Amino acid sequence: MVRFNIEEIAKKKETRIVLALDFPFFGLNNQEKLLAKAQYVLKEVHPYISAVKINHHLVLPLGTFQGVKKLIELIHEKDVPVIMDCKANDIGATNKVIAEYYYSAGFDAIIANPFVGWIEGLKPLFEVAERMQRGVILLAYMSHKGAEEGYGQLVYDKNKEEKIPQYISFARKALKWGADGVVVGATVPKRITEIYKILGDKIPIYAPGIGVQGGKAKAALNAGASYLIVGRSITLADNPKKTAKLLQETLK
Amino acid sequence: MVRFNIEEIAKKKETRIVLALDFPFFGLNNQEKLLAKAQYVLKEVHPYISAVKINHHLVLPLGTFQGVKKLIELIHEKDVPVIMDCKANDIGATNKVIAEYYYSAGFDAIIANPFVGWIEGLKPLFEVAERMQRGVILLAYMSHKGAEEGYGQLVYDKNKEEKIPQYISFARKALKWGADGVVVGATVPKRITEIYKILGDKIPIYAPGIGVQGGKAKAALNAGASYLIVGRSITLADNPKKTAKLLQETLK
Image 1: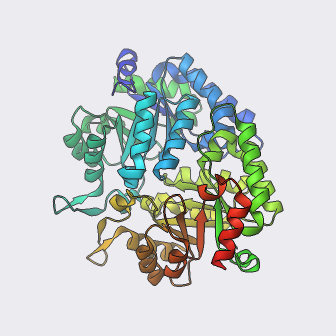
Image 2: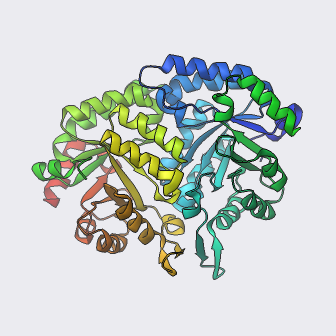
Image 3: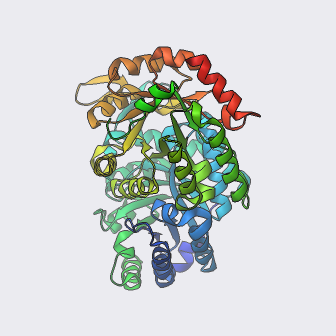
């Protein structure tokens, strides 16, 4: 947990909001405009957030070591940590390279999918995290409808000879592997409750899907989430600052 | 299948090799050197390959619309298609943006993880593929040891009330969703045989893990694979051209 210290900032600023800095497809030659838009949103909302989450909406058009690195520097200037939502799910040798590049670019934590397994899977990624003292956050149940197919399926646990939901298996792996956080959709508060029963206060739950995707902020916090990931309802708002401030005050 | 025509090229050039253009972590200020190395390997081996697969080893340091776009142009000059191995596994709105950027950069196909499900998952990605006439290749069983945990687990199929391996469920989804290819590790030829029984000649199997990871090329082809994904044993060879030529001739 020491590797990724979001809790201190969240307490100090009295906010549980993690800003997902996501924008729609911006076309092919609008990198400058997209970068400026992202910088504008950050400058407006940073007092009301505890971390920023970046995804491929920015990495693909701007480049990790080109535009995104500038954004990370701006975010760090505001004393805010930044998470890369790459949902890493590759073989170990590749996960290692992915982690080395993202952490080197300045990311404080990255998100990975435990479905890929441990040996020659996420183990090399956790080793890089340990060496570079950064965080790893694991997916446990995503916020979209189709999540039921994979995250919601029943799987057979060979060791215990029992039938358990996939997300329970993932929550147990998060504990076993020493993850710094777990993602559970705010759209499924019942799953947050079940997973919180397993994790307790040992690993914080990040709940995406607030706003546009229909997840309710208070229900997610009451169910056991520590952080609310809010994206398009802030980034696409007419007034991102007002929207973020209002949400932060409502939740305080 | 029309969307991503690798078969014609493979037949004409008599090669089943897909080059995984992967390199280890190259440090932070070596982009020019990495780009030059990738260009060198491509120029040497393009006569012996049917497609190139690019992963984060290049996208992260070089940038999709910066260095990688130059590589795609070089690959296309040689009449070789190029696959982005992003293992997309995000919510639909994000998968859509990911597909729009990668296809716009010139990629002919992208790899996705069926674990994320259909509704608000991979459906929007397949819709972009259809609209832009590009390919989608799905993971069915990866080449590393830990793949057993997820891809090898037994899952409960609600519709048929049966217990089936996850990779069988993924192969069925590939048929149902109209995938242009399926990835099954060359390290697990028995799984290739089982999946080939489901897919027949309707969807080609891509087998990674040849060489460094220990997969045997001929065993994979005999089991039903159409393409062999070969990476580090070519890209890190003292003589990439000789290595690729020898492999192609051995398999002919």
